[in-house]
Length: 189
Image (tube, rainbow, N blue to C red):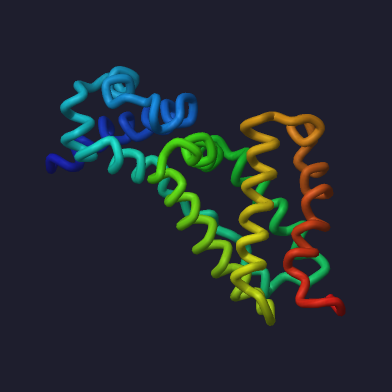
């Protein structure tokens, strides 16, 4: 068994502990010592595995949004399909924790803000571009990413009612028309 294979359970424990700590306390208030204690390893092992708190943060917040291929979805259903994916992402224990880490940490961490920009700007822009939007693709993607992040902040971090207490279906019904409007090609739809 190689060193990497032998150390994988400890590396996984560190990564899980880091996600929990960053989600609960944000980047600035999370310490390597606290992560190590939660993972049951010596702090030196955290640095050995991930080199720095910044590198650990990057590993803990790596996420593929796996956004739907909207070009294959009828235009009338795109908002609902994307809203459903949004709820799935945020309600999933693993991806929701990663996204919460990013959202909570972004105001105080340049690295977290950069990760959100890269994740949402890159992945959302690619999805909108593939959907065939004819004009202002970058602006539409930015508006869509902003709407999704703002909705997540309200529902999952600030827990603002009624969004925070709405069922998944209710959230989809609330978000879908706004997403449709952002994705619309022009006055004719």
